[in-house]
Image 1 (cartoon, rainbow, N blue to C red):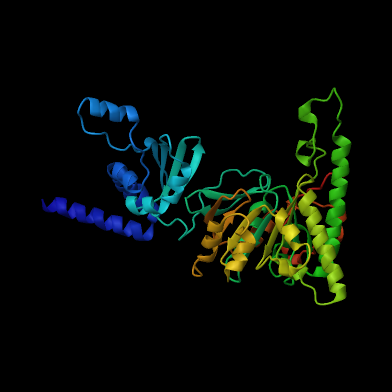
Image 2 (image 1 turned 90 degrees about the vertical axis):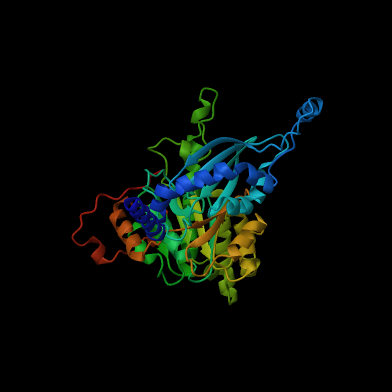
Length: 452
């Protein structure tokens, strides 16, 4: 008997230590079992308490009256599958007639308390089927990205979502994005993570960093072009617009629209071009949009108008030419001047780190989702890197990027410096690399953009 009690105490102590030191291992060893038992035993009562049941069918009521039996109880959604994951559980439900997926979204907080879980996110899989993604612990407290699978071109894992899934920045799906946040909110760390992920891919990185280059110039080994002041930014953006025009000329020349050409070979963007002709895709990172949009004199106003015009043109036409925008700033409102809201309308993806006021959150999500605005305002200042990510469809989620140091990002860029392509129009803006980057290293031949 004493041995049994000692064993139980050891197991209890182990569970407490795991829960404190390694929530993931605690969840995998003990949490899954306890949570599954709670859900299965409380399921019917919780659905009824949360208003997620429907009355029985009329024929069942009529049959009960005819046979003088008790009236049947309200019906809960049918459980299709309960699947454990490394961070929680996935519960898939079949809705009863008259139920809506929005009911489960609205009741997610009540479900979370009832099942004693950390978070529940509801989403509709298909008509009549809802999936509840439950997390057993706070996955954003200590972000640990899962082992990375081979990444697709222009699709980078940049953060972890609150439901335990990986958040990707997919430029093919969302070409242009806006990233706002206050000082020390983790905006720069998110950008470093993004650059480190893109460094290993065959893309051209172009940067504008008007903070005297302190954010992007340490990563210069992987950049095709960089500008660290508004005057250079004007020339860089003009050269990028020229490159875009040349790319469109190539697409037009290779469309080959005739009755004998199969539909699959007709293209209106670079991705259906033959591989040997396809230009390298370009990702343009703007570190602080306000430094480009503010003007204090007439000459600066003329420069500002040129910059905004070029950015709007790239936002409107760049996707088909393989040019993608990633614009960062602390604020992005109409006070930055004429044309800035037109540019914001082109930035489909929205990421908001901690902001200082609700107005800043409205600049990102006011035209998308009021709930996302509220979530962005509530981000804790003690959790840098936490953000709200959404897009123009109205969907949003809380994310947190892993802490990528500047040294880690620099090492990733230096290791993949040989992938940096040369683009003739951007050659005057190619950054000069410090001698220490190349000393003692033999770099493979740099990738070249197709000459066309």
